[in-house]
Image 1 (cartoon, rainbow, N blue to C red):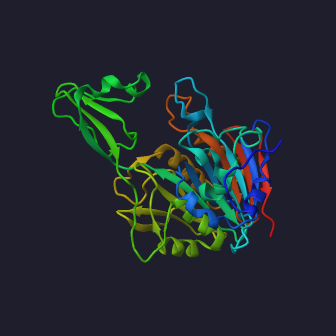
Image 2 (cartoon, rainbow, N blue to C red):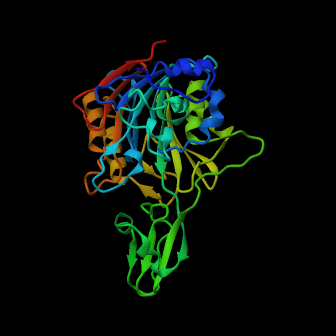
Image 3 (cartoon, rainbow, N blue to C red):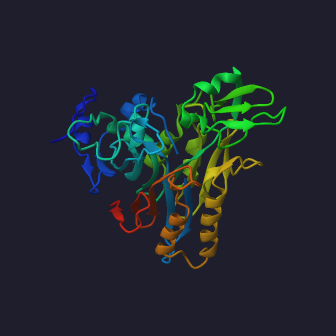
Length: 389
């Protein structure tokens, strides 16, 4: 029994939804053959939230350009975040063949974000016979990493933003749940206040100074919000989709980034983008004070590379992937070492030291146009795909 798709999209998008197919046994992974022009639906995609991990670029033993990527994000069914709730997720492989695009592509989307406010799309739901899968038509706009037939690869990683702390009544924390109280930051010395630049501060988190009898709530500031009236405005993931569809080289992708306004969809969100091509030219794009900055970097995690204070997190993961790249810089990185590097910097929120969860690990070969994929830190089983020219 096929799933319903109730949204009133044109017929070609219902044909796309009919190609939704489970790839694995447990329903963590689905594929979609996308032969329609998804840009017709971009106004719907503007309502989606985007996330955003560890990425590095190297060459293998055959001197072929490769991109290694962990996508880390913690999801819960129906957004119920009780301590004993199992982490969930949904990976969707988008086989992009947009008739309006210059290049075909393979891309991985985080399907949970198709209904992020309700958390109703997760493993096993796309072929359960009852879930409305219409939002899958928007999946090309929430891809987190991708490769196109020209050998361009792109990856998005999340960045934290600074907090504006708003003072609220001192006893406001008494109304919090037990889970929410666990995140309250406590100060006991007179005059101590919460930091605007703590990257681990969550949006709407509380801080309390027991000596001064003061309480604050964190209102996250927006990340990048460019507003040149002469330019089109897009989110990071839509920019990545445009790069994948229309750019053959890193230079072309950088030029495209400079031709549009980039904004983040929600307070408390920002992102940077790694781009690489067959030549090995690799850059990381950041937007600092609303200005595009192009950085000559071959790997990245979740802190700003272009800010002097390196605001963010993921320093240990960056050190791991940087060490792997440096070690095999001249002789090439064996594939098993690429996988081990990804495994070493994977995240499991069930461990006390990790905040995220590695939904997938991937190796993109930019010369052979292949994708090798591991789900949920299970490195015993790989899925392999070829983008044919």
